[in-house]
Amino acid sequence: MTRKAFVTGSAGFIGFHLCQRLLAEGWQVLGLDGMSDYYDVTLKQRRHQMLLQSQAFRAVEGLLETPGLVRGLVEEFRPDVIVHLAAQAGVRYSIDAPRSYVDANLIGTFEVLEAARAVPPAHMLLASTSSVFGANAQMPYAEVHQADHQMSFYAATKKATEAMAHSYAHLYTLPTTMFRFFTVYGPWGRPDMALFKFVKAILEGTPIDVYNHGDMRRDFTYVDDLVTGILRLIDAVPEERVGDFDSLSPVAPWRVVNIGNGAPVPLLAFIAAIEAALGRIAEKNMLPMQPGDVPATWADATLIEALIGPLPRTEIGAGVQRFVDWYRDYYQV
Image (cartoon, rainbow, N blue to C red; front, top):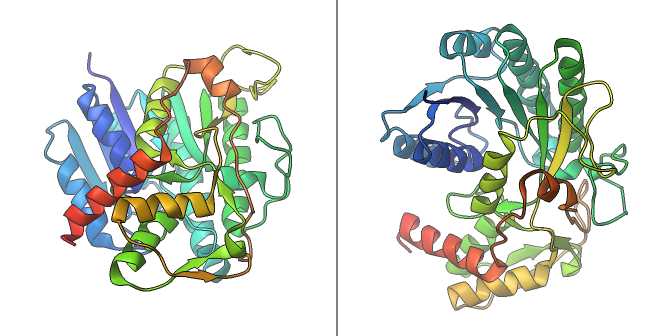
């Protein structure tokens, strides 16, 4: 029988790519997206339009936090798997508009958990973020490391969703995997992310803002590699411990898993890859560190590879070139 997945945030960057792959692999997919105006809604609408070319995809537009909306959809669709990706994203924006993070991330996730309690899926998978590691300076970041000192309200809400999901996994025996994503990039990416902003500015001949005077590193993860990780983890239901590095809860079928490239790239090397792909040199506006930001991220991939085997790791130059090719085609520049 055809497997069914309910995906929140299906018009988002990662949700769009995940739905594409699920459909290509023969799944039936129900997507929910709030089409918030945090960034260009037209980009989100174009993503959904592409997904709707498949008869196996159905799109619903609505806010996660609407009481009973998600539960009603789940009761009707009865998915085998729920993948909860929808969230209010962005570290900086959480300083200016914290209420939107309460609504989308906390209340929205509560609605998803309630829906799963009513109609339990075989596996529930929810997105968190590498930002939850916050002030932890021990690298590479492992899932069993302390993550108690978040440095942005965005990260705080995502850490809260990990705890919320754990309680539901314990109380209602809901098999749950949390993902901690590491700086995802690629075609159809978000306009608020550095790669998108840098490419746009360089093509327009305007300076790019380089924070902490360029002394930063990020574990840039190409979106196709990340989606491969999500797809393989669907069948890695949290049941048995795979080693002392496993984050599996002692009291619930719940685990948190890093999905990252496992190789941090200096910010200036990332910018150099963009310059090479564009054939232009960026004018750099060197600035101090922004509030809520961290100087480096680096994923320990031991757990995910123990669960699903080695992941593909797209080299930064190749990944950036694919984004630039998409950007030039999409915006005709």
